Image (tube, rainbow, N blue to C red; front, side, top):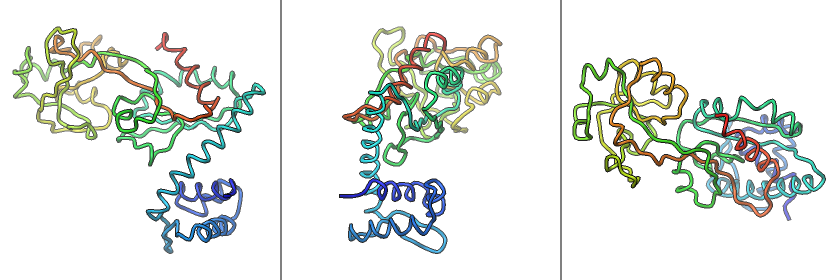
Length: 304
């Protein structure tokens, strides 16, 4: 049987790629952490890390072992918190990731003080990763405000709908004065767009296949995309650099429309079935801290 302390030591070293940083996080010496990992490697009869004078990295076996160790530690943590919840306790560290700071600004951050007052023993760690998320490489408790690709890539995840919205098409008046205002998808041929580098394809404008249709069928229109950026598409659109896809409910889009800095186009072809989700792990013992966070912030949807 593996000791939880040993597995936790290995997981910390694997996460930080450093015995020193792992030791600081654990409150131990680097030598003590190294000794625990060496004992684990001896028992496994496999090296977990490739060591050099400058850095360490996981071996292929170490990568696979790390994934399984994380699952074991999550189950152990879930058991601890389940026992705590039976006593009315919600505690522990909750790691949340999203792909845009704006998502936190609009759906989480305004109510953090209220959440902390209700659950003072839950420590929250918020991360942002603008590139595509892989749960094997990015192990978090909650994946907040992520679109459908994560569920397709990792069908074992549980999910709940965060919001549904139209995916509109917008441009600045200056851009349209220069390139013309398209009224059908066929008229998009000579236009350009500002896209996201991690979209697939990365130069596709999303439309609904049939105008004014109740059938939501996504279609890609391939355009020139001289600029690809993980953020600030709307700001660059205001500067006249191209067309953008954007959720109609985004606060910045509403502001730019109100100030006549952006104009909606091709509204008959807007894709009306865009959906954003919360993803979390499917475990036998659900962690109370995860349930508390999701239920609390979903209860605030009417204020978004």
